[in-house]
Image: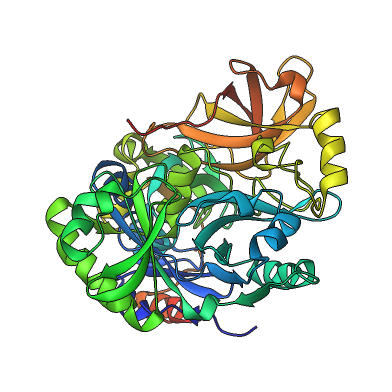
Length: 367
Length: 123
């Protein structure tokens, strides 16, 4: 075991009293105080996250867009300059290798953001799949720190510290400018279900960006926020997490994300034949939301059971008490025939059958 | 982190305050910090018998569920209704208002003093 890598903001996190967790080879702040308070701060004002563990892969060249069209399930060649798209990279059998955000920074320059745990697989796969195209793939993860400010006050907090017009930046758009006087890429993206921004900067600039946003945000109620609340925020927002809802045994169609797959691409794409079959046959299981009746939370790996027959009809992929709803919530894959909202099910919570109801995702939508 | 010296401890991060053959039991600050915000607690029933080292309840936080291990053999005399109602008390005051239950201890349980427990959690 090699020891986990600190982010460029590690000393700041230590000074803030963070608890750390090893995550995909990184030492990441899991919470600073109460993760519930951090969760509520993001829902009501703003939270500040260090996401420097995320992987950044640059794809450049005249055929960068075509290479990505072939490599991913989406159609990055159709993304406008300065815009972003959620996408996935799948294996030949249609299984999801990772979910990604693809930013088109320039006509011939893309930034592909991968999960920290997968960048070591995604970057070589992109290199392999770009072969034969006039494009260069480069894992630039070490060159980027990533800081997110998420929550309804985010645009107001950023306004005094950036030369960009944050409030008029569109959702899933990105622009180059400065924050705290240092060069950044400012994107209106996130993983919390709230308005917010993700700020890509050089690791050497991360402290300046973090401190400027902290200073501007504290009067608004901004709090530093760790990975624990990031997980409950994304769960409430119904957003899948790789390793839980998404994995190599799952295709975008099970995850309810068939819309991200574009079959209409001239060169085809890796996994297209298998995914076309899955599209036509329909998914074998579907991702649903669960709300538990009691106080015990369904957790990843717990069985979902048909209360009438006692048959196992699915498996929980993520679950937690929801700070916003005040009740346990979960996502689960269940048989399509029993996936309708309103269906009453049981979840096997460590040997005891707990009542739950299938609900539409997301659990929470911002007003 | 300083653990109160008047308490005894288990390797499973419970504390025990003994008064004669009656003991008050809770979990340590080290445990609550590892768990995160506790949102649900299941305690043994009053009158039930518990066996040292075996699970007698559970603590559920946003992130995980942990078994609560009986620190000693004995009978449950009282549970702290306040923490069942408001589990956040366990986080905010683990050695005080966040106590979990009182029990009548039978036999002599194998416990750690504060110095030994401090050393354990330093590892």
